[in-house]
Structures are given as C-alpha cells and as structure tokens.
Length: 274
Image (cartoon, rainbow, N blue to C red):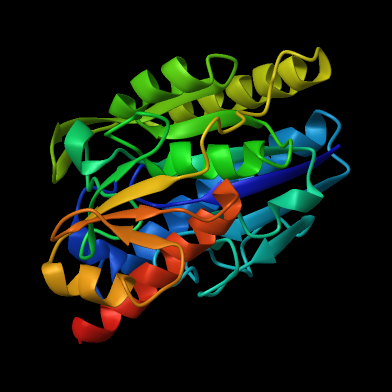
C-alpha cells in the first residue's frame, strides 16, 4: 500500500506561537524539529504495518519546513509552493491519505486557526458547513477521485468536524487549546504512543474496507474574503460569482477545479498585501 502524508504545523504539539512559524525566528528550528519528529514516527509505523511507499508533503507556509536530512530515508518528500493542489499535491498516486498537524477554522476557535490563508480568507463554506477547515476541503478534493483520509492528527477542537464528516477516520488530538495563541500538550512518549496506535488502527480500517472517500455532493465553494479589494481581484477570474462586497461563489464543474481556483485567488489577492 502507498500512503500520503500532508503535514501542517499549527496543529502540531508545542506550536502555539505565530512567530515561531517564520524562518529566522529563534524558535523556528524547534518547529522544524517537531514537524520532522512527528512525521518520522508516522512514516516508521506505516512501514511496520505494510506500507510499500510513503509520500510526505510539507504543507505549511512556503512548504519547506521538514528537515530533508532528518526525514526517514524511505520517504519521498514534496516541498515548495505554489503547487497544483497545494497541501494534497501528489496524493492521487496513493491508496490513502493521512493529515498531520491540522488545525481548525477561525469560526471554531482553536490554536492559530485559519482556513488556507488567515490574511485573505475569513470563511469558507462547502456542503452547508460554514466552519470549513483545511481538513474538510482537502478531504473532499481527495474524495472526488476516490481517495480516503484514514487519519487526522491535530488540534483537539478539529475532532468534532472529523467525527461529523468522516467518522471512519482515526482522529488523534495532539494538543488542546487554551486560547488562540496557547495550548497544552502531553509529554512526547504519550504522543508517540498515540500516533503509533492511531496509525495501526487507521491501516487496519483501510484493509477491512471501513475507510471511505468523502464524495462532494456539490462542487461549489463559497468564500468570504477579508477585504473588498480581495473580491475585486477574484471577480477577474472565470467561474467566480460575487454575492456581496466580500463573498464569492466558485462555480467550476468539479470540486477539484474550484479547489485549485481558490488557491489561485488567494495568491492573486496577496499581490495587494505586499
């Protein structure tokens, strides 16, 4: 079996601080070590449970955070940004995906909460969910091509959405929020054991046919941006309907096309944030 790991940072243990996510900050190397350690633990356990190949996608910020020299030598690493499907580029080659270090949407609270871009995006709505997370967007985009998400590890508050939309997915709470910029995390031996148990359960569910792709029932994505000028830029793109000053509906024929359009709109809007 071939597995795909999408690795973010905000839902990782011991990462509550915005500045430590920025290269050059005194704590940034600590973030890299944490992301690499968690990833290696999961990679190792996947191979111990029958993986033939593991693809790791660095999926935070500029997507160059995981230390390639410390990453398990058996894993293939995808890094750098932009890329065609952002956090899930390359997952179409795998049998199933696992999400590590994932976090909540702004509406849910949680630590360092946002959906794809805290500077550009205020809210995303899909499938009637007005608190759409990166977990849900990515899971639907993978589900459209028949790929299940078998494990999600991250912010404790994200568990509610995982249980609602993919109850067959193993959820692991790596941290519990105390505020938007503070968390509480158990010691590493506890987290490591939880990760290993979770991977074993997730692989077992996949083998037994319990894990399912989450198929989108409606391809449209509704997006509320932070500023009217973000919407001005978005209106220049095809398949974009402006509903009000800051709300857009993305109307391409497939969910994955709208997913890619969302990524393009975010990058275009950043041109006015320099």
